[in-house]
Length: 371
Image 1 (cartoon, one colour):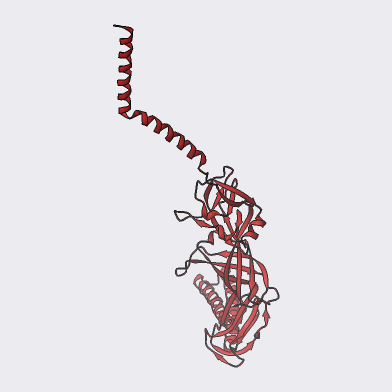
Image 2 (cartoon, rainbow, N blue to C red):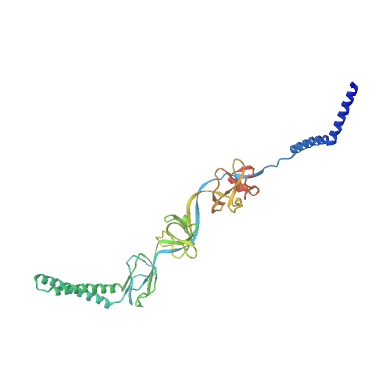
């Protein structure tokens, strides 16, 4: 084969291979892929990055807070007694007047009873005679001049005489009515010369020092109230005093499920009457808490009450809190994390796990902005 013929054969083979390659379409595919890759790279470079949402946040200020528990109550006398006649008869003496201050054992009432007085004297005389007869009998018995049976009889007579005198004295005592404790005579229901029956009301006696404010505390709050703790009481007339909790009931009311509480107030001059309306403020034990604006409180998907917080990683999250009190400046809550800021603006526009831009504010700035 000549040199010229070999070159012609090579050219023909190359031409056939080129035609086959073009027929497969790979030629256009290579150009399209390169173009598409170039366009995608350019598109990614030109696409704008979405900016992070900006929120305002403050550093929480923790304080020791004693939650205030407010109750409605009424004043009552420390002691109250309705004095009743112990026997029937005619009123001879009234030892106290309405409004009078009396000491314990002061005579309040004396009924007529000459026959009862005479009975006491008779019984006393009989006892004296019986004792003398017994003394003589014992002497005679020692000498052998008196039978033992007679001595026994005289001893029985003396004992009976003592019993008769005790009964007569008790009847005399029932004619009198004395104050069981020191206090104020609030009312007198009888007059001298009036006939009364046993059990009839004679007078009402009140002990007003201390004066006691009685209130009811809910079963939710009773655990925060303890005997001996202080309480502030504001009376309906504007007087405000500090008292001491002297009793907390251990049995709830069947109807209201509340527990009775008694607060004792000093009332030496008796200026506070019984039956006056009062507001009682009790204080729970101190807890570490934070005051936050009401507007930032939110509810989680599970129904928990809380607020949005953000840490140093600028990731927003939800913190469950417990409301201790609703004050004039905001809500007092517990459960706020110490290592995070509290979001006070934009909290409703972010979700848990969102990355945010943080604009830190002071508490004063936050309160001013939320007005």
